[in-house]
Every structure is written in C-alpha cells, then in structure tokens.
Image (cartoon, rainbow, N blue to C red; front, side, top):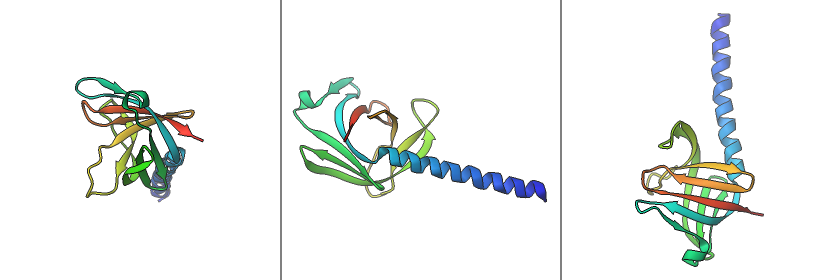
Length: 134
C-alpha cells in the first residue's frame, strides 16, 4: 500500500514539474524580440535586416505568437511549448501551434541572456536569431 502511494506521489510530482518547466520557458519567451538574421535552406543562404531592408520582430504574449514586418502584423498563431525529439538530436523545448487549421513548422529554441535562437524543425529550413526589445 505504501509503495503504491509513493509511486502515485512520484508520478504527480514529475508531471507537475514538467508543466512548471514549460510555464517557466513560456515566461522567458514573453515580450518582443528584434530579428538579427536568419540562415539555412537548401542553398545555405543568410539574410539580415540590412540585406533585406526589413525590420522584423516577433512577440510572445500569453499563448499567442505574432510576427511583424515593417511594423505591420504579418502572422498570428496560438502556441504552446512541448518537449519533443529534435532533428538536431535529443529532446528540446519546441514552440508548436495549437491551431490545427494553420500550417506551422515547430521551432526548437534556446535563450541565452537577451538572445533568442529559433530553429525550424525540418531539414533544409532556417534558423534565426533575435535580441530582446527592452
């Protein structure tokens, strides 16, 4: 009986810590991020605000992801964070869409200080860097 109770407690704690971790990751994403550049694709191209003559930023607010180009809303999607197997190896936190009606490539991400790195989870896709807007 004690073993069953202990097992139940461990399951509850482990499931809560995963949700707490996802919530913490979502909090670190919150705010606006200015695009620094992207690279990738089949041809291995790179682009920056200077090379494209565009100002791009993304915004995470609650469970909404918005992409702005030259100050105009380009796209808006609902998202959540899930730990999934990555094409880059191992499991990574990923931004995934909760809207089944819109196509959205999952993106793995890392945050280092005020830098956000997003990687599309598909072969020959792009990786992008962003700086937090304060």
